[in-house]
Length: 484
Image 1 (tube, rainbow, N blue to C red):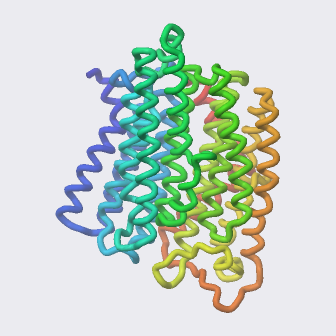
Image 2: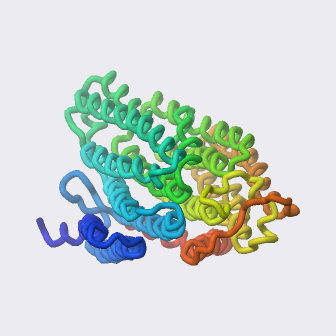
Image 3: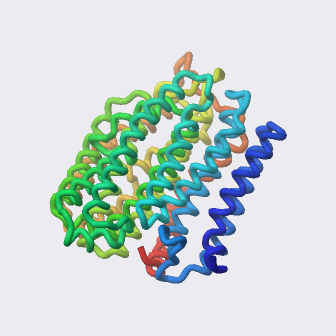
């Protein structure tokens, strides 16, 4: 193991070591504050190690242990995962402090899930693909069930466990078929080896992997678990599932698609395109009928991942640099908006321990808590893609990628889906400024850490929409100086 191997793998070593320290620490002293402190310390040190390790990664990337490869793009994704975990930990402290007697184990699961996401983003081989995916997924099963004495989280965890296991099984079967057809499990070697192999095995294997990934990303028609799990899981965990979990799969998918050129097969391309169009239209149409804010955000996330697939689909026809730039900017915007949305759900709660989920509970929130209402307004406008928010910048990039790739059907689906979405996003804003009704239950929770985190995210949503140049320049520099 060379010195460069050590520097590049240092963030992963810190995450594993920090998890072990946290396990030992909470076994000695079960204190919520200490668990949070050790978690934040681990995540911050891992961020610092990523910055140091970045200097040792060449432009073409660095192969680590033969099954992963680190480039500037993977470092960028890992930074997002760590920041998402930090925000989740801050929300979780106030959320679980009043809801669970013992919740230190949650932070152990948070660290292991984030480690799995980091491995998945760097995968170049089926072994690292399934390893990262299962470390992430198994941690999420237990995270969704917190607090363990509540019925709805347990029900959501059971649903996620069963359906996620089905998705993982499909992916494993797909890997087996591709290996049988090609004799290799490395992403970059699959397409070349498939030319002289059994095409039926290869295409069926690719189809099963696509089905499994569609389950993980909750794309239509594999989306039915999403609203139930989003509604049943604690809001802070839902935000993590919607961002870090799906962001890791997106990071892996972009590399997988580019490495083995699987979209060059017309059948695969049209199948994925159908899934993208269906997700954009069906997700928005189903969101129109929702009165529960968490279910509305669930269907909205289905539509937004459909938008993101537009950029992935044009990787063969548009400039690869524009495609990767689009994916990174969209993921940044999606992370900020979604974490803010579910953070607000966790902060605007009833005096009791139940979450405030229904839109009518937020009636007149602007007149009772202008700060949180302003952030929720920014979230709704950003999700709708209204100018002067980062959501507009993200959708503009997707539109530009679709136009350059001449994917006109996908562009029209993007326009129609966005038009449908404007209605229910503006309905949220209208609810916030309506006259307060007697018996309205939403009230602000006294949480300094959560309020600060939500406020920072709300400011970022607006600032990056008004002045996106620093983000665009940073992403462009990373893409130009990094391979896939």
